[in-house]
Image (cartoon, rainbow, N blue to C red):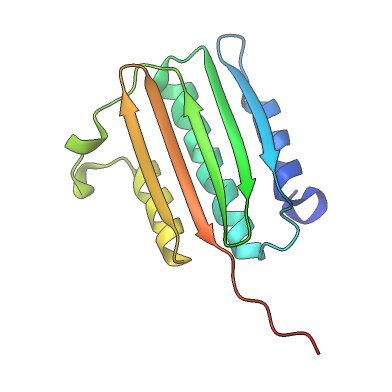
Length: 138
């Protein structure tokens, strides 16, 4: 899907597949993603995929969203839900679920970051990757 639809199209398709009768999921995008490397696109897609699985499996959310934001220096995927949340600060690295650990490792492998903010009013996950430098044009 990534090669055929690009990151934005693949995320839109993921949101459509993951939406349930009890959880409405919106998708939005800002900026162009056609200059992302395949590893960057795949890492951001996997983070969104795991994030949405967690929303559906654990959050008890009625609403969620995935936003793809592309800027000059970085690209971010933001996953938000209005579910029950969890105490992200109390999770020790060794006790984190495989999904959260894998998300963090994917971002770190590409010099990116993963931020998780959660409360009883919901959770926001922000996965950010720097844009790689392009070779100079002659």
